Amino acid sequence: MKMNLLFLRKHFFRMGLAMSVGLMTCSMVLAQANVFSLEDAVSYSLGHQNAVRNAKLKIEEANQKILETRAMGLPQVNAVFGDSYFLKKSVVLLPESFGMGNPNFDREVSFAQNHNISGTVTASSLLFNWTYLQGLKAAKVYKTYAEEDYQAIRRKAEDDVTNAYLPALLIQESEKTIQKNINNLNQLRNETQALFKEGFVEELDVERIDLSLANLQVQLDNLLRTRTMALEVLKLTMGYPLDDTLTLASSTDDVLASIPDELLAEKLNFLSHPAYRTILATERLNRVNIKAKESAYYPSVNGFVNYDMKWQGDKLKDLFYTPSSVIGFQINIPLFAGFGTKAKVQQAKLQLEMLQNGKVDMERGLAFQVRNARINYENAQKNLVQREKNQALAQKIYDTTKIKYKEGVGSSIELNQAEMALYQTQQNIIDGKFELLKAKIKLKQALGK
Image (cartoon, rainbow, N blue to C red; front, side, top):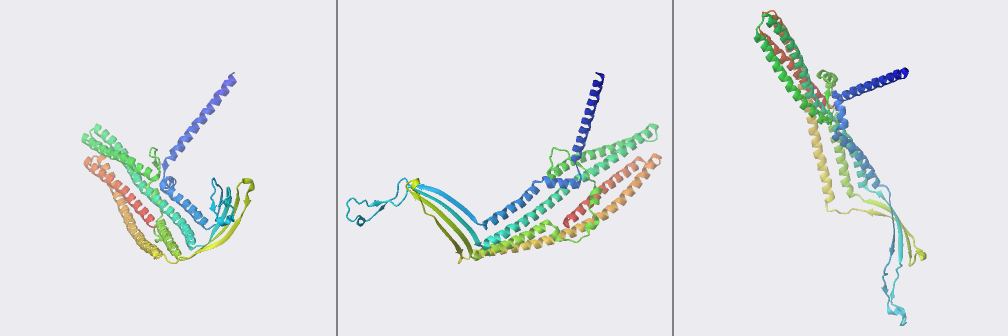
């Protein structure tokens, strides 16, 4: 009995330990599932944004369009079967001369049979049709357009998520800095409170620190509320459930390091932009459209084979079989369409010309974006370097003022001013990194990377 009890205790202990480990593992997995780096957020959006999904479905739709168009040029076979039964036969009135003077001659006669069973099999095919050939080519070009459009929508989704991620990241960095300052200021407050109790400083010095702490706490509370809104925007952009928690894993330094400076030194290549490749695919589609409109000038040739089976008779057991078959072709030669074809061709050419004008505008716009982004990137780099120097100087002044205050040769007003100046330079550093990060990403996007 004691052995059994001991065994059961060990067994339940192992089960409890296994369940605890399992629950801890699940909790860790769920926690990690809600933590997103910028790369993770972009990757998540590509699988959950309906715009991206629909663009991918358009590629499959284009594949089906090719199959549909190709089927038009394949032989078409149809079979028809039916039975016509005369409830009342139609009659023909014969001339009286057919009776040859017979007074009992019935002039009404019917040549129809009660049952007319027929079965027809028809096979037809396009032998030559220029419109069909251009339509097949257009379907293939449309698939290329759908693929490029998919890449353009993917790129837009990446850019949208990146642009939504950065503000939330800036707020998070500001929160960390303010919380660090609150911790440091709490330590200084404790030290000043001890000096006040010893009679070395006035109570006003403690109150000034309390006021600074209160101001920092207000800033932190405001940032927390703003971060909540920024995360909601990010969730919406990612296609992430709004009720689920989301935590940012990246930092500004991580994102800055992920974009090498060498990449930003590359020259602009228009083909790196999916939107530009999309307009090229549209241009090819318009050229095919012109050819399709011009195909109305060309003749078309259709071939057909028909096999007709007929059974006739007043009774089903007395049916007689009369088959027939025919084979042939038909040539359709357009002669005059009232200048309608010419107008359609001209419209297609005008559409192509307008598209080419738009392509030139896009090239100029992309070149301008790159030039402007390079200038902003260089300015952001220089501004950050200067702000880092300013912060180092403000930190030195604050440390010196803090030492003088503790030694009794400095005032709390000087310390408060040095503290405010340090906080401002710290925020300037965060803003400077954010501006550099935005400029770097804008330049990367302008280059089509």
